[in-house]
Length: 200
Image (tube, rainbow, N blue to C red):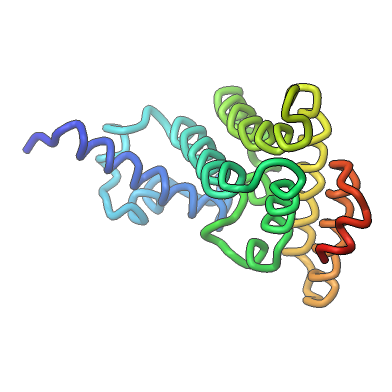
């Protein structure tokens, strides 16, 4: 039986989404093709109909995860400083920390991505810059490129804070770290301290 283009596209997306979830849960190296395909409800034989290699799938899944993060969080945030606050507070929230479905690929996979082939690292770079440019556009609406490095630095700090908060056994300490991370991110992004205190 031959499937139409729409069915193939939907099946490919199902594999990408299932792989994104498993990669964030078990890591890239800890996720074999058979487990990935089982998660998608497909046989191993169907894999090469959609992807040339596991590296191809990793690059696609990472890009998809970042695209989703941008579409669901960054693009939906208000313009200007109010949007920055929304993004930072969502990212460094206990809910985000504790959620495996909404997990950020940067916080979950960064150490493994750096060891991936250039194609995967390029897909990650393109995806993360989409997210970062959304942050930069709220910092400098007339010239977002001028704020890109500052936005990337804040994003990196937030990803590291989220990782460390997840690793801590002491829940109160983990929550306090997230709250301090919010203040640190606002400081990096140049949000007024009084504004931060009033919003806390």
